Length: 345
Ligand SMILES: C[S@@+](CC[C@H](N)C(=O)[O-])C[C@H]1O[C@@H](n2cnc3c(N)ncnc32)[C@H](O)[C@@H]1O
Image (cartoon, rainbow, N blue to C red; front, side, top):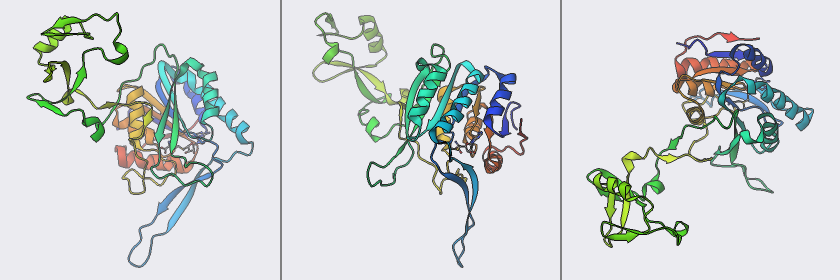
C-alpha cells in the first residue's frame, strides 16, 4: 500500500517545488535529481515486440523528453538555477541534494550549486562508471563516467551513513590467516614509516620493546580477547576478523554499480534510466528509514522503486507523459503498488 506521503506529480517541477514549499518546507531529507544536461538530444522510450520464428520483433520509439536548448548553455543554466534555488528550502537542515550530470555541464552546475548552497555545502563529486564499453572517439578518450554532485544544506549538521561494497578477490587477499574464530588479517600496532618519530616513546610489553601505537591497557584488553597475533619473530599485530568487517567502505569512485542493460530485469526501455542499486546507495547514505526523499526529474521512477525498498517515503515529479506512464507501471510491477493518483498543480 502507498504510504500517505508518497506522491507522483505530473508537470514542470518548478511549480511543483514551489507548491510543496507551502506544505512540506524543511521536511525532505534527500533530493536526488538527474535532470537534462544540455546533450542536445531528443530522448525516447523504446518498446520492442517479441520476435518469433517468422521474423524479428518491431521496435517502436515514443518520445519522452527533449534535451535541446535553442538558447544554448545560457538558457539551460537559467532553467537549472531557478529550480535548484527553489529546492533548497524543501530540505531538512541536515538534508542533502544529489545532482546527477556528466561532462556536458557538471562543471557549470557545480559553480551554480556553490552559489545556491555555499561552497562549504559541497561534500563530494562522485564518479560513477556508467558504462564498461565507452564509445571510441576519434580525437579524445571515450567518456565512461557520470558525475554526482553532493551538497549539504547545512554542512555542520550533515553526515552520510557509511555504506560498504562487497569484498572482492583483491580486498579478501590480506585475510590469509585463520583461527577458531575465522579468517583474519593483521593490523599494525607498532608505529611505522612517518608515524615513527624520535619523540614517540617505546615501551616493553609482553617481552617486546617497541613504539606501540596504543596504550598498554588497550593492548592487554585485546590480548585477553584473543585479538593479538604473535609472529614467528616475536612481533605483535592486531587481528581483524573478516566476519567483523561489513565490506569495503565506499569512496567517491563508484565502479561497482552496473548500468541498466536491455537484458536487466529492471529495464523499462526509458533511455536515461538509472540502476536501482545506484539510487539505493544514495538513499541509504543520505537518509534513514522513515525519511522523505524526492526526485523532481523522475524519468522512469527509479528513485521511488529504491526508496520503497529502503522504507523511505518519496515524492516524484516529471513533465513527460511517457515518464509518468512508466512510473505507474514500475510502481505496480516492481513495488506492488496497485494504483496511484497522479497529482498536478
Ligand atoms: C535523465 S531523465 C531522468 C531519468 C531517471 N533518473 C531514471 O532513472 O529513469 C530526466 C527527466 O527529466 C524530465 N524533465 C525535464 N524537464 C523537466 C521539468 N521542467 N520538470 C520535471 N521534469 C522534467 C524529463 O521528462 C526526463 O524524464
